[in-house]
Image (tube, rainbow, N blue to C red; front, side, top):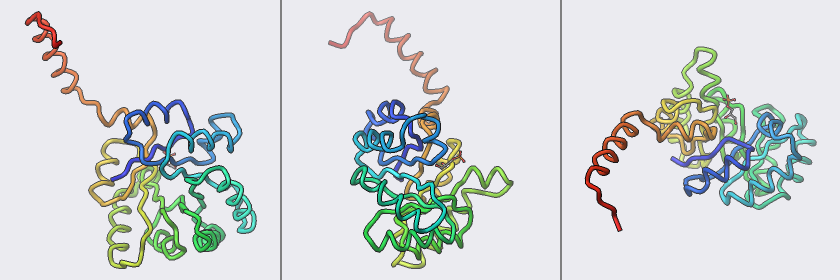
Length: 218
Ligand code: G3P
């Protein structure tokens, strides 16, 4: 499973990208708003740092305006992916842009039928929101499983499942088990994924024992 970082914070992105484990970035209007900076500048900096796909979301809701914004966003860098909401106009825009060769990410997906329509519209990525489904008492990871099963029935579907709204290590592992192609995770969660109390405890014991040897590796 590929890992994307769900953030517009260039400092956080650069820090995690040192590991070479970042396959792409996703942003949304709420994440951009947190930076208090021009959207084009934010995306340009991110695209210079990360060579994989960088999702940039349109803020328009009508098809013509979405297409206009997509053209502007696409000019920022080669690796920009146009993120569109899962509405009638969004699907329509996805269909037009995909046929023009744009990479697209259809977002705010909460059902399997929505995912199938996005695939039909030629979306490069579909973004089902796991945590927000759990918030309303549904099982977000089950949705990934259902979409994967459905897409596997049709070999012509090339749309990648990009699990979003991932809030915990459990979510991360559940979507991997369900067959998501990508999980997009906030920076804070990335740092939680490698931590374990027994790792810290074990390391401390090893280092204490090592000190008693009075040796140096040189
Ligand atoms: O990028 C969209 C998604 O990951 C948002 O997550 O936690 O706000 O539901 P969340």
